[in-house]
Length: 368
Image 1 (spheres, rainbow, N blue to C red):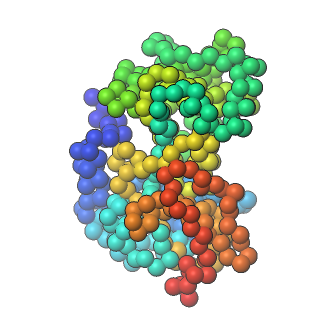
Image 2 (cartoon, rainbow, N blue to C red):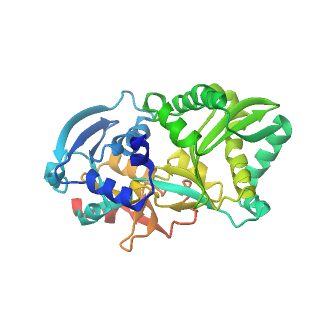
């Protein structure tokens, strides 16, 4: 039942290998989209998930201050031609979403190999107090103040009625508030059968009234708790202002530490340091890992094709994680004489093995 859910999320080595082979087969047909926005063109070709996770991210970043929306031109490319740069749309920046092995064989000039997704996890050693202390002092202070003011409560529930309320009135409105028409949601039936029936559903109360919740996948053998769905009542701004949305993370960490969880997985985000969720999840002293599902062996090949002020502005404004020649994760900060590296987007998180400051004059030299 719900094969689609397991196809998307399973960590089984057999399923992930099968998925990777199927997704990157030579006979597949992949979307190829050029997006023009704010004087910069970005072309994305490859795995369909990259349209939402990667191309849309570049559009969100280019939309800031833009007078008009992105203009897209779409075509199709076969898997057999995916490795041929001539088959890709002409653009200032080209990105291919594919397998790690193919991305590593793509041209090296002015390019990076980037993970398509990364996950943030917390490992527990059985001491609840030590786990709470790993959260940044500022986050702890804000949470403790909110707890005194709002009397937040946190409980596990198996009530089907609460699942319905949570899904319809908390999760869906929150996703729409955060992503608008770009929202990516789990279907109700899959959430009920694959998460609620075998996982953990939590309810957040404020002064005794339900105001939010979270639905997690639970792997009892590995003792891994994975946050899948979360939300606050109506997606309302007041629950962000009160700290209730943040409290979900704090209370989930506390529950996991006290209930035998070995690893809490806050799930994934795009590998760009300018992504808000990247910086948010980093604050909880998490560790960055490659995804334990099919995304673990998928990569982005990013190549810069034009050296323009808009290209340089974009690269500097969006430092990224990349894969080193040894297969480790590094944070790449671009800069030049007129554009300082955006070190305000911190990469201080375990799992990132190296920080690289890359001079754009050197990186883009092959284009001269």
